[in-house]
Length: 212
Image (cartoon, rainbow, N blue to C red; front, top):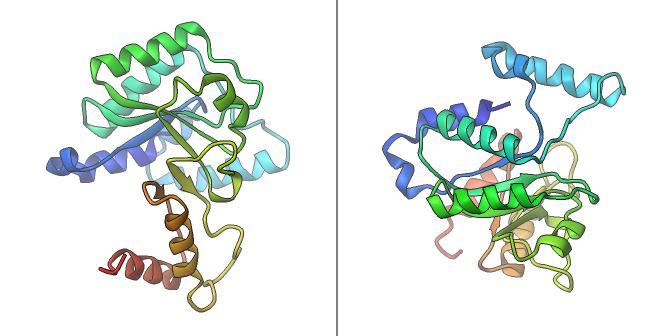
């Protein structure tokens, strides 16, 4: 819905050249939420609930060249920048087909400097990688969803979801999981997020450890 991009755009300022920005297209935003201001977070929760109940299908997807052009323009404006470092096809389904027109549009945006790398992000990207491996510069997947025999992602997420659903992870689990993930892909990145204060403390402690 563009909320994260707007927030990031406000805080980046002069730090933009030293930061790497990744954003995505393909899952269509809900305009009402994007323009709701402070009411947006509870509206997102309502959307999630009605989706789980099967009342309203979400997300809606579109992977056309027109969708990509409009989404990139909107993202650049929200971020307050003239380029993004990684632009990803977001959560394609296994049978999603990327048209020649879309591929050409992505490559034009890359050649013009509006995007620096083309990526794909999702939980079931094997088929996409098989079909479009030569197009993607970056692969993002859940930490538990990849196998080096098939492909190796550049970025992973959902590191903690398989280890704990609620509360702090016991003992040194956060450090152990982060160490294992980064050792498995020394040149890769791991996205971590949490609303648990203790888990956040352990993540910050790990990030600031000079031994890493």
